Image 1 (cartoon, rainbow, N blue to C red):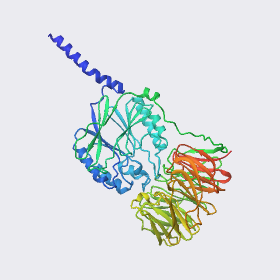
Image 2: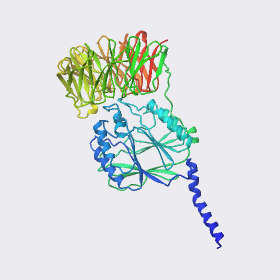
Image 3: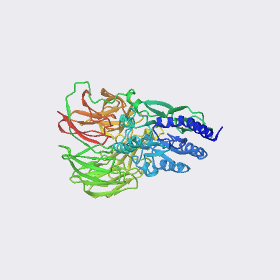
Image 4: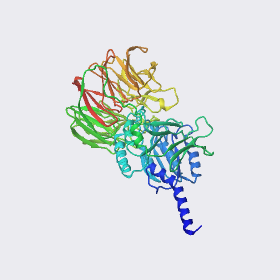
Length: 631
């Protein structure tokens, strides 16, 4: 063979050997310059703070550090069990031992039960979302909370803005995208379609998520979805995580048991440009806004979009609405037309429902302070600083501000000067509720399984009532307690409605709701009925004067499964309740008959604030503030 023939043969072999790789790379939508194959470790649902969470996470870190070929680690949420600072710090200490880069997002356990309103997570880990490129592939991580709310996840408006900016960059470069989140991209997230529609506009290869603690495969309108098992051992001898291997044309998923050998892949996703396939894929129906029933017509008097998550309820001062949001702003809007009146900026997200007393607005912030503001212009009257973020809601009675904290402390402050009157330090869990002030007592629940009754003047403990179950998850901590006929009424995640003697704390009665009560309660204006919103689309009214559970009415409100932490409110013989999917219900207070339904947006409503003449002031998780009214 001549030298020329030898060169031609080698060149031909190279062309033949490279052709499949070049074809795969071009099909994927990246340039042939993409780096070599790589692997990464994927952990999810580590639940540090749970029974074996820390031990199992430490075992995973040891195994990962013994694998020299891993490029990085992704953790896709539920890092902790309750989102406490102690649990987050412990998780960071363990994950800090990794010898490769870490990319991490929170899950619902890090957000719903968070004493900081999920603000500790980015402080501890540096961020609660990520975007990076490795070997020509763009990895984007984004969580959906929900912050301080039980129920569906929701992609925050501020996170959607960030995602738009990130995807705009990626679309311009044409990079393939792997999206990481905690929930599957389906109706378990109220606004799942907002993210899925965005992902279908770019070269998305897969969505990776946890939440279900099991290996499962999904098809999200053509976007391959992969759910990974929890890192926990559960009932097995050891836990396990996922090893993801990425080659030119595929991504494989294999289980790696702690201390063992990685198993054969249980699933693979072909890597290719699917944008044309997305257009033809079957689409899950989007939420509807119209209702078939012939309800009286309603209209929006006005609507403002703050662009930030709102999980607090609105309040009214004279002719203005006052709200707080996740940007840290407290805002005032004219009730007549929604015109902004003033904004006061705190140093952290405001998840606390304000309280109006005279010409003063009292509100707390996750910057750790309680603020008293002039209702007319938002200027500060006083500020009371604490050691931890506050998510609790204040209540004012007899010129005293009563408010809980994330330190397990409950305080009474002077309305005029903000000076401490007394402090109760006996709690073992954080407080998020709005307290009830009734007949010289202060009543509130905390995330330590306990419901407290304190003397309003001294803070002395009058009595406590404790949930029988050992887990803090069943604490009567999110509901706003109500009282009538010598009783205090609460609901808790045990799915019970409980009537306690207001003076002694003795149980008068309790009933396990057949439709699963959880955190939503309210009382009639005349104190004759206590209202309960159930997880299984029923709303019930019980008679407050009865010595045993006596049902006044029940209504199938047809809102489906609902876990929203919104209270029921009443005005002018109408009861209002807002669902996790943005539907406001109006019911006849005496009969339970549905008067009308209205959907503001596809986002959980906070406790509605009824106004005169059938109008209702609303806020929702998507950052909207609105007044709706009869036409």
